[in-house]
Length: 85
Image 1: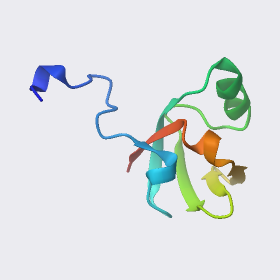
Image 2: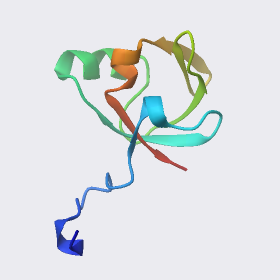
Image 3: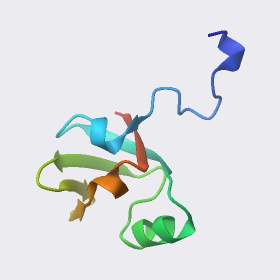
């Protein structure tokens, strides 16, 4: 793929949260699924630019944001895009 065809918004290396490694720092870059989902996660502190850790994947996806642990269904976790580091 030509370099000029790559996205310029920093998402070229982004992963769905379901594919992210456990217990490593991650930065949220995008929350898909519409304004309701963005509002719900934003109210819990999960916003683009925040640092999170994925603590477990089963039976639910557990995301640590600041000192809060959040359990997410797979459908929600698939819409959260993160960058390692």
